[in-house]
Picture 1 (cartoon, rainbow, N blue to C red):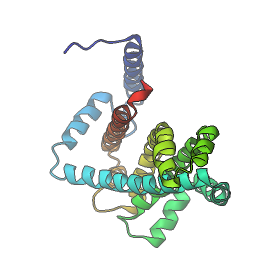
Picture 2: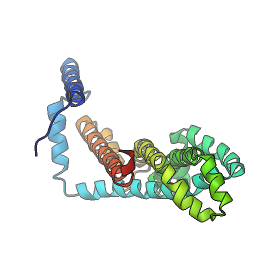
Picture 3: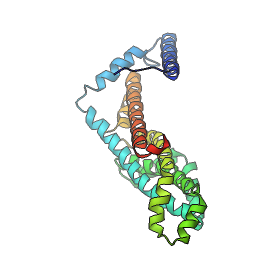
Picture 4: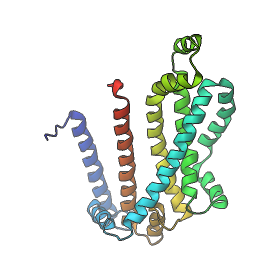
Length: 251
């Protein structure tokens, strides 16, 4: 299969090359692996992580926490978002809650979660609180974007509420759902790692990053960071792939 590179691909590659060169020059300037190891050393450290016997357990635990927090956020965001989009009174009731969740510092939520919950539950709880507002807001906006004339016509023909939601609202909000899910994954993934750094579960990327930082293993900290970025990228690609499958009419 022939792979064709567009102008955007070349620009992206040029940006990546620029960052690597800047990184290499900065590492030469500092001249200390404790401050900033060179890219080639980080690459070796990152590859060595894959050979660790506990690597899959570490990655699997973090991914499981992220997936669980995302699924709970998705269910709540869909249900409450649709209800808020249909019912203005409920939307008014939910608005202060959503604003509070989006403005409270993540670190404050984590510190409270450390008091209330066990170490394994803290990242999931933080993921839920950070992802839910994005999905809820996008779903609500999607409901409001539905043509009111169509809703009025459906009511005129006495079509049931359940059918209106299933056949009118759900298809209309699908692009909003995926947009909210993409934003939620980006923000929520960082919150999960932060939660693991502070809660220190037995297995988790954040736990290993904190351990490496304690012993000044800067190369390990950066290596685990790159692994986290890679996983986040994979999640993003999966969401976009599902979006292309379900929303074929957008093409």
